[in-house]
Amino acid sequence: MDLHGQKVLKVAIDPLWEAMDDPDLLARSAPGCKRLEAIGDGEYIAVVELGVAAVKGRYTARVRMSDKRREAASGSLHVALKGDGDSGFLTGEGDVRLETVEQGTRVSYEAAVTVGGRVAGVGQRVLRGIANMLIGQFFKSLEEELRSVRAAT
Amino acid sequence: MKPAPFRYFAPTSLDECVDLLSEHGDEAKLLAGGQSLVPMMNFRLAKPAALIDLNGVSELAYVGETASGGMRIGALTRQRALERDPELRRRNPLLAEAIPYIGHFQIRNRGTVGGSIAHADPAAELPAVLCALDGSIRVQGAGGERTIAAVDFFQTYFTADLGPDEVVTEIVLPPWHSGDGWAVQELSRRYGDFALVGVACRLRVDAEGNVTDSAAALFGVGGAPVVPEAVAQLVGTRAEEATLAAVSAAVAAELDPESDVHASASYRRHLAGVLTRRALGEAYARANGGAG
Image (cartoon, rainbow over all chains, first blue to last red; front, side):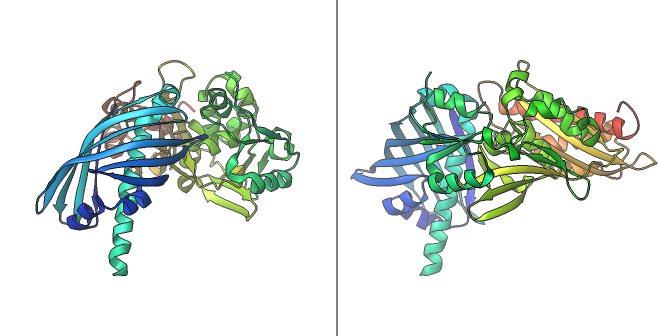
Protein backbone atom coordinates (compact mmCIF):
# COMPACT_ATOMS: atom_id res chain seq x y z
CA MET A 1 0.00 0.00 0.00
CA ASP A 2 1.46 3.35 -1.03
CA LEU A 3 0.78 6.28 1.22
CA HIS A 4 1.44 9.83 0.36
CA GLY A 5 0.24 13.23 1.40
CA GLN A 6 1.26 16.67 2.40
CA LYS A 7 0.27 19.34 4.85
CA VAL A 8 1.42 22.86 5.59
CA LEU A 9 2.11 23.31 9.30
CA LYS A 10 2.06 26.82 10.70
CA VAL A 11 5.40 26.39 12.42
CA ALA A 12 8.95 27.17 11.40
CA ILE A 13 11.21 24.41 10.18
CA ASP A 14 13.74 24.56 13.05
CA PRO A 15 11.35 23.63 15.87
CA LEU A 16 10.08 20.81 13.66
CA TRP A 17 13.58 19.41 13.33
CA GLU A 18 14.04 19.65 17.07
CA ALA A 19 10.72 17.86 17.57
CA MET A 20 12.07 14.88 15.65
CA ASP A 21 14.56 14.33 18.47
CA ASP A 22 12.09 14.89 21.29
CA PRO A 23 10.46 11.56 22.22
CA ASP A 24 8.07 13.19 24.70
CA LEU A 25 6.76 15.59 22.12
CA LEU A 26 6.49 12.86 19.50
CA ALA A 27 4.64 10.63 21.94
CA ARG A 28 2.14 13.38 22.75
CA SER A 29 1.54 13.98 19.05
CA ALA A 30 1.21 10.41 17.80
CA PRO A 31 -2.42 9.24 17.90
CA GLY A 32 -2.97 6.70 20.67
CA CYS A 33 0.69 6.62 21.69
CA LYS A 34 1.01 5.30 25.23
CA ARG A 35 4.77 5.05 25.42
CA LEU A 36 7.70 6.04 23.26
CA GLU A 37 11.10 4.91 24.37
CA ALA A 38 14.30 6.04 22.68
CA ILE A 39 16.70 3.14 22.37
CA GLY A 40 19.42 5.17 20.70
CA ASP A 41 20.65 5.74 17.18
CA GLY A 42 17.36 7.34 16.12
CA GLU A 43 15.45 4.24 17.09
CA TYR A 44 12.32 4.10 19.24
CA ILE A 45 9.98 1.51 20.66
CA ALA A 46 6.40 2.76 20.53
CA VAL A 47 3.35 1.33 22.24
CA VAL A 48 0.16 2.53 20.62
CA GLU A 49 -3.48 1.92 21.45
CA LEU A 50 -5.80 2.64 18.60
CA GLY A 51 -9.51 2.22 18.19
CA VAL A 52 -11.36 2.68 14.93
CA ALA A 53 -14.98 1.56 14.85
CA ALA A 54 -15.18 -1.34 17.31
CA VAL A 55 -11.66 -2.50 16.42
CA LYS A 56 -9.48 -1.58 19.34
CA GLY A 57 -5.97 -2.83 19.57
CA ARG A 58 -2.64 -2.41 21.28
CA TYR A 59 0.34 -2.39 18.98
CA THR A 60 4.07 -2.32 19.60
CA ALA A 61 6.30 -0.89 16.94
CA ARG A 62 9.97 -0.28 16.35
CA VAL A 63 10.49 3.04 14.59
CA ARG A 64 13.77 4.12 13.13
CA MET A 65 14.54 7.58 11.80
CA SER A 66 17.64 7.88 9.68
CA ASP A 67 19.33 9.72 6.81
CA LYS A 68 18.48 13.13 8.15
CA ARG A 69 19.38 15.77 5.63
CA ARG A 70 18.91 19.11 7.29
CA GLU A 71 19.51 22.24 5.28
CA ALA A 72 18.53 25.83 6.00
CA ALA A 73 15.07 25.84 4.47
CA SER A 74 14.41 22.23 3.59
CA GLY A 75 15.41 18.68 4.31
CA SER A 76 14.30 15.11 4.58
CA LEU A 77 14.48 12.04 6.73
CA HIS A 78 13.83 8.37 6.27
CA VAL A 79 11.46 6.52 8.58
CA ALA A 80 11.20 2.75 8.89
CA LEU A 81 8.52 1.05 10.91
CA LYS A 82 7.82 -2.50 11.98
CA GLY A 83 5.05 -3.32 14.34
CA ASP A 84 2.49 -5.87 15.38
CA GLY A 85 -0.41 -6.18 17.72
CA ASP A 86 -3.72 -7.79 18.56
CA SER A 87 -5.21 -7.85 15.12
CA GLY A 88 -2.47 -7.48 12.59
CA PHE A 89 1.04 -6.42 11.72
CA LEU A 90 2.66 -3.74 9.65
CA THR A 91 5.99 -2.98 8.08
CA GLY A 92 6.82 0.07 6.09
CA GLU A 93 9.27 2.72 5.23
CA GLY A 94 9.16 6.08 3.64
CA ASP A 95 10.54 9.55 3.37
CA VAL A 96 9.37 12.73 5.01
CA ARG A 97 10.33 16.01 3.41
CA LEU A 98 10.25 19.39 5.11
CA GLU A 99 10.29 22.62 3.19
CA THR A 100 9.91 26.21 4.33
CA VAL A 101 6.96 27.93 2.70
CA GLU A 102 5.31 31.28 3.24
CA GLN A 103 2.80 30.01 5.82
CA GLY A 104 5.23 27.80 7.73
CA THR A 105 6.60 24.43 6.76
CA ARG A 106 5.30 22.04 4.15
CA VAL A 107 5.55 18.45 5.30
CA SER A 108 5.17 15.80 2.62
CA TYR A 109 5.46 12.08 2.98
CA GLU A 110 5.70 9.09 0.74
CA ALA A 111 5.77 5.59 2.10
CA ALA A 112 5.28 1.98 1.13
CA VAL A 113 3.49 0.07 3.86
CA THR A 114 2.45 -3.55 4.12
CA VAL A 115 -0.38 -4.39 6.48
CA GLY A 116 -1.19 -8.00 7.22
CA GLY A 117 -3.25 -10.12 9.53
CA ARG A 118 -6.95 -9.98 10.22
CA VAL A 119 -7.17 -6.21 10.22
CA ALA A 120 -5.89 -6.16 6.63
CA GLY A 121 -8.30 -8.83 5.45
CA VAL A 122 -11.37 -7.18 6.84
CA GLY A 123 -10.33 -3.55 6.67
CA GLN A 124 -8.87 -3.46 3.16
CA ARG A 125 -11.56 -1.06 1.96
CA VAL A 126 -10.62 1.67 4.42
CA LEU A 127 -7.01 0.97 5.42
CA ARG A 128 -5.40 3.60 3.25
CA GLY A 129 -7.88 6.25 4.28
CA ILE A 130 -7.43 5.49 7.95
CA ALA A 131 -3.63 5.41 7.61
CA ASN A 132 -3.62 8.81 5.95
CA MET A 133 -6.05 10.09 8.57
CA LEU A 134 -3.74 8.95 11.41
CA ILE A 135 -0.71 10.55 9.76
CA GLY A 136 -2.72 13.74 9.34
CA GLN A 137 -3.71 13.65 13.02
CA PHE A 138 -0.07 13.23 14.00
CA PHE A 139 1.05 16.30 12.06
CA LYS A 140 -1.89 18.33 13.31
CA SER A 141 -1.12 17.47 16.96
CA LEU A 142 2.56 18.15 16.38
CA GLU A 143 1.68 21.57 15.00
CA GLU A 144 -0.54 22.29 18.00
CA GLU A 145 2.09 21.10 20.46
CA LEU A 146 4.77 23.27 18.87
CA ARG A 147 2.51 26.30 18.70
CA SER A 148 1.53 25.95 22.35
CA VAL A 149 5.20 25.54 23.34
CA ARG A 150 5.98 28.70 21.45
CA ALA A 151 3.06 30.56 22.99
CA ALA A 152 4.18 29.53 26.48
CA THR A 153 7.72 30.82 26.08
CA MET B 1 -15.79 -17.66 13.96
CA LYS B 2 -16.85 -17.21 17.55
CA PRO B 3 -16.57 -13.97 19.49
CA ALA B 4 -14.32 -13.51 22.48
CA PRO B 5 -16.17 -13.74 25.80
CA PHE B 6 -18.15 -10.69 26.84
CA ARG B 7 -20.69 -9.69 29.45
CA TYR B 8 -24.17 -9.33 28.05
CA PHE B 9 -26.74 -6.79 29.17
CA ALA B 10 -30.28 -6.50 27.87
CA PRO B 11 -31.83 -3.23 29.05
CA THR B 12 -35.54 -2.72 28.40
CA SER B 13 -35.58 1.07 28.65
CA LEU B 14 -33.47 3.96 27.41
CA ASP B 15 -32.74 5.05 31.00
CA GLU B 16 -31.44 1.62 31.85
CA CYS B 17 -29.30 1.68 28.71
CA VAL B 18 -27.80 5.08 29.59
CA ASP B 19 -27.02 3.83 33.12
CA LEU B 20 -25.25 0.78 31.72
CA LEU B 21 -23.31 2.96 29.30
CA SER B 22 -22.11 5.30 32.02
CA GLU B 23 -21.06 2.28 34.05
CA HIS B 24 -19.19 0.45 31.27
CA GLY B 25 -18.55 3.28 28.80
CA ASP B 26 -15.45 2.66 26.77
CA GLU B 27 -15.39 -1.08 27.48
CA ALA B 28 -18.89 -1.63 26.12
CA LYS B 29 -20.41 -1.70 22.67
CA LEU B 30 -24.05 -1.15 21.86
CA LEU B 31 -25.67 -3.91 19.83
CA ALA B 32 -28.49 -2.83 17.52
CA GLY B 33 -28.90 -4.83 14.31
CA GLY B 34 -25.37 -6.16 14.65
CA GLN B 35 -24.74 -6.23 10.90
CA SER B 36 -21.30 -4.64 11.26
CA LEU B 37 -20.46 -5.29 14.91
CA VAL B 38 -21.18 -9.02 15.04
CA PRO B 39 -18.96 -9.96 12.07
CA MET B 40 -16.15 -7.89 13.60
CA MET B 41 -16.67 -9.66 16.93
CA ASN B 42 -16.65 -13.05 15.22
CA PHE B 43 -13.38 -12.18 13.51
CA ARG B 44 -12.22 -11.14 16.97
CA LEU B 45 -11.26 -7.76 15.61
CA ALA B 46 -13.72 -6.24 18.06
CA LYS B 47 -13.48 -7.63 21.57
CA PRO B 48 -15.74 -5.50 23.73
CA ALA B 49 -15.80 -6.51 27.38
CA ALA B 50 -19.53 -5.86 27.51
CA LEU B 51 -22.35 -5.85 25.02
CA ILE B 52 -25.42 -3.74 25.69
CA ASP B 53 -28.22 -5.12 23.56
CA LEU B 54 -30.64 -2.40 22.46
CA ASN B 55 -33.11 -4.80 20.90
CA GLY B 56 -35.29 -4.84 23.99
CA VAL B 57 -35.51 -1.04 24.13
CA SER B 58 -38.71 -0.93 22.12
CA GLU B 59 -39.28 2.76 22.89
CA LEU B 60 -36.56 3.47 20.31
CA ALA B 61 -38.40 1.82 17.39
CA TYR B 62 -40.84 4.29 15.87
CA VAL B 63 -41.52 6.57 12.93
CA GLY B 64 -43.03 9.83 14.10
CA GLU B 65 -43.56 13.42 13.12
CA THR B 66 -41.96 16.61 14.40
CA ALA B 67 -44.02 19.70 15.32
CA SER B 68 -43.07 21.29 11.99
CA GLY B 69 -44.11 18.26 9.95
CA GLY B 70 -40.70 16.65 9.56
CA MET B 71 -39.87 13.08 10.43
CA ARG B 72 -38.51 11.59 13.62
CA ILE B 73 -37.21 8.10 13.26
CA GLY B 74 -36.24 6.11 16.33
CA ALA B 75 -32.75 4.63 16.34
CA LEU B 76 -33.96 1.04 16.64
CA THR B 77 -36.23 1.30 13.59
CA ARG B 78 -35.22 -1.47 11.18
CA GLN B 79 -34.17 -0.29 7.73
CA ARG B 80 -36.63 -2.83 6.32
CA ALA B 81 -39.49 -1.28 8.34
CA LEU B 82 -38.84 2.02 6.58
CA GLU B 83 -38.55 0.30 3.22
CA ARG B 84 -41.96 -1.28 3.72
CA ASP B 85 -43.60 1.89 5.07
CA PRO B 86 -46.15 2.81 2.38
CA GLU B 87 -46.10 6.44 3.55
CA LEU B 88 -42.35 6.93 3.30
CA ARG B 89 -42.28 7.70 -0.42
CA ARG B 90 -44.64 10.61 0.20
CA ARG B 91 -43.06 11.80 3.44
CA ASN B 92 -39.48 11.67 2.25
CA PRO B 93 -38.89 10.23 -1.22
CA LEU B 94 -35.11 10.73 -1.02
CA LEU B 95 -34.87 8.54 2.06
CA ALA B 96 -37.26 6.04 0.47
CA GLU B 97 -35.06 5.80 -2.62
CA ALA B 98 -31.86 5.37 -0.61
CA ILE B 99 -32.97 2.54 1.70
CA PRO B 100 -32.91 -0.30 -0.89
CA TYR B 101 -29.24 0.47 -1.58
CA ILE B 102 -28.29 -0.52 1.99
CA GLY B 103 -26.71 -3.99 1.80
CA HIS B 104 -29.18 -6.76 0.97
CA PHE B 105 -32.69 -7.20 2.31
CA GLN B 106 -31.43 -9.74 4.84
CA ILE B 107 -29.16 -7.01 6.19
CA ARG B 108 -31.98 -4.47 6.18
CA ASN B 109 -34.23 -6.89 8.08
CA ARG B 110 -31.89 -6.58 11.06
CA GLY B 111 -29.97 -3.39 10.39
CA THR B 112 -31.25 -0.30 12.15
CA VAL B 113 -31.27 3.39 11.34
CA GLY B 114 -29.38 4.28 14.53
CA GLY B 115 -26.83 1.51 14.02
CA SER B 116 -25.91 2.75 10.58
CA ILE B 117 -25.64 6.31 11.87
CA ALA B 118 -23.54 5.46 14.93
CA HIS B 119 -21.23 3.14 12.95
CA ALA B 120 -20.48 6.02 10.53
CA ASP B 121 -19.14 3.86 7.71
CA PRO B 122 -17.76 6.22 5.04
CA ALA B 123 -19.55 4.29 2.28
CA ALA B 124 -22.92 4.08 4.03
CA GLU B 125 -26.04 5.59 2.50
CA LEU B 126 -27.93 6.89 5.55
CA PRO B 127 -25.25 9.30 6.82
CA ALA B 128 -25.03 10.93 3.38
CA VAL B 129 -28.81 11.11 3.01
CA LEU B 130 -29.02 12.85 6.38
CA CYS B 131 -26.37 15.35 5.30
CA ALA B 132 -28.14 16.05 1.99
CA LEU B 133 -31.45 16.54 3.79
CA ASP B 134 -30.01 18.83 6.46
CA GLY B 135 -31.08 16.32 9.07
CA SER B 136 -29.88 15.98 12.62
CA ILE B 137 -29.11 13.28 15.12
CA ARG B 138 -30.30 13.13 18.69
CA VAL B 139 -28.14 11.37 21.25
CA GLN B 140 -28.51 10.71 24.94
CA GLY B 141 -25.94 10.12 27.65
CA ALA B 142 -25.54 10.51 31.38
CA GLY B 143 -24.90 14.19 30.74
CA GLY B 144 -28.29 14.64 29.07
CA GLU B 145 -29.55 14.96 25.54
CA ARG B 146 -27.86 16.61 22.56
CA THR B 147 -28.94 17.29 19.00
CA ILE B 148 -26.19 17.47 16.39
CA ALA B 149 -26.52 18.53 12.75
CA ALA B 150 -25.66 15.59 10.49
CA VAL B 151 -22.94 17.56 8.68
CA ASP B 152 -21.16 18.04 12.02
CA PHE B 153 -21.91 14.59 13.42
CA PHE B 154 -19.93 12.53 10.91
CA GLN B 155 -16.27 13.36 11.41
CA THR B 156 -14.10 10.75 9.75
CA TYR B 157 -13.79 7.00 9.23
CA PHE B 158 -16.17 5.30 11.68
CA THR B 159 -15.93 8.34 13.91
CA ALA B 160 -18.87 10.48 14.88
CA ASP B 161 -19.56 13.13 17.48
CA LEU B 162 -20.78 10.49 19.89
CA GLY B 163 -19.24 9.89 23.31
CA PRO B 164 -18.52 6.39 24.65
CA ASP B 165 -21.34 6.93 27.17
CA GLU B 166 -23.86 8.17 24.60
CA VAL B 167 -26.45 6.39 22.48
CA VAL B 168 -28.12 7.62 19.28
CA THR B 169 -31.84 7.87 20.05
CA GLU B 170 -33.35 9.25 16.85
CA ILE B 171 -32.77 11.02 13.58
CA VAL B 172 -34.74 14.12 12.66
CA LEU B 173 -35.52 15.18 9.11
CA PRO B 174 -36.93 18.58 8.14
CA PRO B 175 -40.35 18.55 6.44
CA TRP B 176 -40.25 17.40 2.82
CA HIS B 177 -41.26 20.20 0.48
CA SER B 178 -43.69 18.65 -1.96
CA GLY B 179 -42.50 19.36 -5.46
CA ASP B 180 -38.84 18.97 -4.61
CA GLY B 181 -36.88 16.69 -6.86
CA TRP B 182 -34.52 14.03 -5.57
CA ALA B 183 -32.22 11.28 -6.69
CA VAL B 184 -29.82 8.69 -5.37
CA GLN B 185 -27.13 7.25 -7.61
CA GLU B 186 -24.69 4.63 -6.49
CA LEU B 187 -22.23 2.28 -8.09
CA SER B 188 -20.93 -0.88 -6.49
CA ARG B 189 -19.22 -3.86 -8.08
CA ARG B 190 -22.02 -6.22 -7.13
CA TYR B 191 -25.55 -5.61 -5.95
CA GLY B 192 -25.51 -4.98 -2.21
CA ASP B 193 -21.77 -4.27 -1.95
CA PHE B 194 -20.47 -1.15 -0.31
CA ALA B 195 -20.68 1.81 -2.65
CA LEU B 196 -17.59 2.67 -4.63
CA VAL B 197 -19.18 6.08 -4.90
CA GLY B 198 -22.69 7.27 -4.20
CA VAL B 199 -24.55 10.55 -4.25
CA ALA B 200 -27.85 11.73 -2.80
CA CYS B 201 -29.36 15.02 -3.90
CA ARG B 202 -32.40 17.24 -3.60
CA LEU B 203 -33.45 20.19 -5.80
CA ARG B 204 -36.16 22.83 -5.65
CA VAL B 205 -37.39 24.54 -8.79
CA ASP B 206 -39.69 27.56 -9.23
CA ALA B 207 -42.61 27.85 -11.65
CA GLU B 208 -40.29 29.03 -14.44
CA GLY B 209 -38.07 25.99 -14.04
CA ASN B 210 -35.23 27.83 -12.31
CA VAL B 211 -33.43 25.99 -9.55
CA THR B 212 -33.93 27.84 -6.25
CA ASP B 213 -32.29 25.42 -3.86
CA SER B 214 -29.89 22.52 -4.23
CA ALA B 215 -28.27 20.10 -1.83
CA ALA B 216 -26.17 16.99 -2.25
CA ALA B 217 -23.92 14.67 -0.32
CA LEU B 218 -21.51 12.07 -1.65
CA PHE B 219 -20.35 8.90 0.07
CA GLY B 220 -17.46 6.50 -0.46
CA VAL B 221 -15.19 9.40 -1.39
CA GLY B 222 -13.65 10.26 1.98
CA GLY B 223 -13.78 9.52 5.68
CA ALA B 224 -17.23 11.03 6.07
CA PRO B 225 -20.04 12.17 3.74
CA VAL B 226 -18.92 15.08 1.59
CA VAL B 227 -21.28 18.02 1.05
CA PRO B 228 -19.87 19.68 -2.07
CA GLU B 229 -19.95 23.46 -2.29
CA ALA B 230 -20.15 23.48 -6.08
CA VAL B 231 -23.67 22.10 -6.13
CA ALA B 232 -24.89 25.58 -5.13
CA GLN B 233 -23.83 26.74 -8.61
CA LEU B 234 -27.03 25.16 -9.92
CA VAL B 235 -29.16 27.79 -8.20
CA GLY B 236 -30.52 30.30 -10.70
CA THR B 237 -30.02 27.95 -13.66
CA ARG B 238 -32.38 25.63 -15.47
CA ALA B 239 -29.98 22.73 -15.09
CA GLU B 240 -29.16 22.63 -18.80
CA GLU B 241 -26.84 19.90 -20.02
CA ALA B 242 -23.84 22.24 -20.07
CA THR B 243 -24.60 23.51 -16.57
CA LEU B 244 -24.95 19.99 -15.20
CA ALA B 245 -21.66 19.01 -16.79
CA ALA B 246 -19.88 22.05 -15.35
CA VAL B 247 -21.36 21.65 -11.87
CA SER B 248 -20.66 17.92 -11.65
CA ALA B 249 -17.11 18.47 -12.86
CA ALA B 250 -16.68 21.12 -10.15
CA VAL B 251 -18.10 18.72 -7.55
CA ALA B 252 -15.66 16.00 -8.63
CA ALA B 253 -12.78 18.47 -8.44
CA GLU B 254 -13.61 19.17 -4.78
CA LEU B 255 -13.16 15.53 -3.82
CA ASP B 256 -10.05 13.82 -2.53
CA PRO B 257 -10.97 10.12 -2.55
CA GLU B 258 -8.63 7.27 -1.62
CA SER B 259 -7.54 4.30 -3.69
CA ASP B 260 -8.20 0.77 -2.52
CA VAL B 261 -8.34 -2.69 -4.07
CA HIS B 262 -11.79 -1.91 -5.48
CA ALA B 263 -11.15 1.39 -7.23
CA SER B 264 -8.41 3.94 -7.72
CA ALA B 265 -8.75 7.49 -6.49
CA SER B 266 -8.93 8.88 -10.03
CA TYR B 267 -11.62 6.38 -11.03
CA ARG B 268 -13.61 7.31 -7.93
CA ARG B 269 -13.32 11.00 -8.76
CA HIS B 270 -14.42 10.38 -12.33
CA LEU B 271 -17.31 8.24 -11.16
CA ALA B 272 -18.37 10.89 -8.65
CA GLY B 273 -18.69 13.40 -11.51
CA VAL B 274 -20.72 11.01 -13.66
CA LEU B 275 -23.06 9.99 -10.85
CA THR B 276 -23.50 13.58 -9.69
CA ARG B 277 -24.46 14.66 -13.19
CA ARG B 278 -27.00 11.84 -13.46
CA ALA B 279 -28.42 12.47 -10.01
CA LEU B 280 -28.81 16.22 -10.49
CA GLY B 281 -30.41 15.69 -13.90
CA GLU B 282 -32.85 13.16 -12.51
CA ALA B 283 -33.68 15.33 -9.50
CA TYR B 284 -34.28 18.31 -11.78
CA ALA B 285 -36.62 16.30 -14.02
CA ARG B 286 -38.60 15.18 -10.98
CA ALA B 287 -38.77 18.69 -9.54
CA ASN B 288 -39.86 20.04 -12.87
CA GLY B 289 -42.78 17.65 -13.01
CA GLY B 290 -40.98 15.10 -15.14
CA ALA B 291 -40.16 11.55 -14.25
CA GLY B 292 -41.19 11.96 -10.58
